[in-house]
Amino acid sequence: MISGKSGCFLREISFVCLGGWKGAASWFWLMVSPKRHKKLLRRKRDPEFADAYEEERREWELGQVLAKARERAGLTQEALARKIGTTRSAVCRYERQPTNLTLSTLEKVARAMGRKLVVKLA
View (cartoon, rainbow, N blue to C red):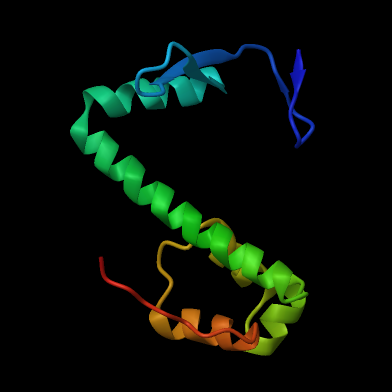
């Protein structure tokens, strides 16, 4: 068995080949769970699934950015919640599932952490 950081155990693992360097014989291999491996394979076959997966990944990354910024500011979820006038569970939801965050909420969070919100269109 392989122990993960969270303490859970994986009974099975898969190795996914990500390709090699240009002109090199070595290959990159990524160790993933069987569930993640199925998602990676499905993304290759199904463009609609790939688009939805990519959108979900971007939302997850936003939550990670919020959590890391809060930690860098030295705030707990409880302290941030008090500063923006909401509950700790709402802050947790912002970091775990930021699907319906408004710009005004993001701005409140940024201000409470002593940061500035910057929105870019690419």
